[in-house]
Length: 385
Figure 1 (cartoon, rainbow, N blue to C red):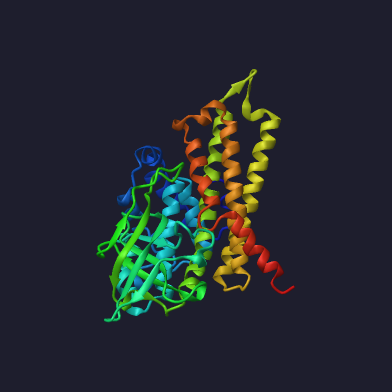
Figure 2: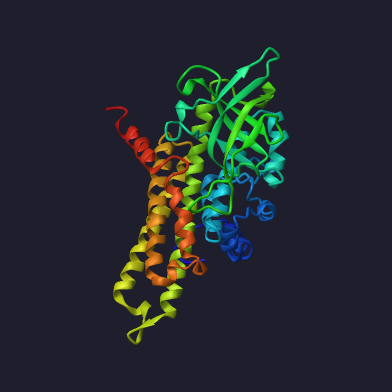
């Protein structure tokens, strides 16, 4: 690991990072290009990650989790993303689903779903976005109607769902009441439920090592014990889940960009032009210095936001939005500059840089676009004026 990555870590965090780095280098990095090209979702590797406790990072120990805080979680996800941002990104989402069930589910629900999720024998997906309700999540139209037996019948379509079709557990936000956020509730839908189907796997710019599909709910009838929390709590549950999810994606951007920077250092040390190593050119050194500085600043903000979320700071949602916006913009910019430093080689798939650029681009969009992150921050600044 580089000195930048390990700055200010405790002894326990260093040990956690080293174990995770070994996994990323042995289980992810050697295969990431092939997974991307073949659009292969490596479920077997996810289960190996679960053997290290990486599929239930924030879940309490009695439910099979690792009971880590967000500060440790962002470290894990950053290091995983040095091996493959796409797989690290899916694990961030899977861990968000597991945390939501652990945090808001009752004892029976935790016992039913969390052991499988923490072992990655059961995979999880988060279903909020819809074809007509992306950034405006409170306008979602998927409905959950009570029938005469007290069951819920879910009807609607969810869009851009990571893991869809391969996942077994879907945390679905659906409208049980009137318009706006107060009418939304949270449910768990299982892959085998009648009426649940999936669209074709989307053809994407990046994140090809995990499936992205529509989730189609055509009269999916589920018992009332599949509702997480009370009716009307769904939007609050969804937004609280996204606070952690945004930190996870921010951390994945840091890891991908750090890998791109490390590859650039190696490439410039190996290449010569005009009788000297490229690494000795001061103009290129300055570019590397800026990349490292910006990553270090982004990492500090991500860790500050994670610490705020761990201690329940009222400003944590704004800090998570700041961290997500800044780290994903920075990560993509650093990766793009790393591609430029590789010259024509950066444009070739075999060098892996162009894959990092493609994978990191979507981080500026998912878990709330970076424009929405600015809205959240601005609201926090102006709400009492």
